[in-house]
Length: 631
Image (cartoon, rainbow, N blue to C red):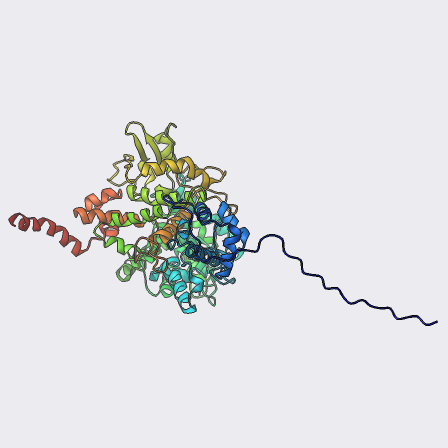
């Protein structure tokens, strides 16, 4: 039976469904404002929200206009900006702000100026650049860095690296190069295993530090002078470099002597050949002798000094001596063991003679004045340095939005202000304790035992006072102190008291972030990677240097920074600024010494940059009065 073929009906055309709702409105290039604004918000999110509402738009309409103008962002990001949840942080997002400002006919920078950080934090550098380095670089790069040519980008990066990050001076370039090849031995048990000092050498170092730092010496020993914690740390670092150079292999970057670590001992310091090798090795490494080599030779002479030298009083060190090819023979060892005092006499005379020879040819590698020359050459060095504190205040972020960044800026401001008012060394500044208003002050005896000072409120004077016992100073025996404590009432100028109260009341706790309070006025920013809020010598120096990098150095590519030609430096440079300022104003080395708690001779040798033209200008002020009176 035949089955008929099925009939297929033709397809029925189904009309397309109309989208519900009204079609999108056409994009207006410049929407008209609905009302006038007489007071503009300072916050970025409030200003953006105001302008969107003022021009009768919402995030959806604005997003369409931004995309049409070539901007890259999404609608949720715009909403987050309006609510204050996020802020623009990339070059692309900063470009969006330019589009919005153009769309609403706002002055250039209207929105950007309301960001606490007016630079892009992400996206400026290639992905291969480490995150930590990119964060450091981003602070000093212009917002349009990614839009510039490759040649301009290379030029900007080279300037930032050489002038801001590395320091710009010949010494910093040298130090940056040699610091890449670490060779100093570690006596604290930390660091790479290959740099750890052997156990017997650590025991010898501990014996030396106990001899020079203990309140009372061991029975049978005599000494001249005591090392404080900072001096002991510095001497330990210098000796670690010496033994590290002896242990480094001759065929690596350090080009050391290659002494096996088990043969290292302080007994080697009684050999003139060891000292000669070391100072000549440093001369080859740097290219010339400096005062550093002379200081090391004087330290060796002190170790071997009759009656009070530690090496002189430790003849047991001779038993650990072993031959070193080209430096120490077995015959030398036998002679030393047979006459320890004679060997110490010989190296003592040799070290003193060599130190005098080096003193005649030593050159200055690190000119302490070079980084701050633009300040020292100004008519008012202190007034010039004060411009950095004003730059910090001008760029202070919004505390409500960025409480931690604000706290760091206030801390930076107070570091420089207190440094300029006090003129103390960084040890005294970073160890300054805090006594809050209404709390009992720390007794002077306790401060003497802790060898530190205190910032306290004086009810009698009605102001903040800094009190530091004289034993806390490096030059405590100076005639300046006459065994009396240092006491200074801080002046309430430039709103200083208000910033101190704000720092103590709010910002300091934001920096501590719930961690243990070390009790010092200045505290570090506590992070997940570092819960210790106390500063040490290195971290305080780095903090001061970072303030100068961010606020002090004028950056021609961003237009930020206070002083053109300034270079990174640490807190010790403030003493040069203060001494030079007083010298330029008075011509008196004695009055300059009062500003930094030192002697006129020390100011003349180390701190004051009082050039002939400065002296002539000061004398001319007196002589010119004759002509002014006659006119």
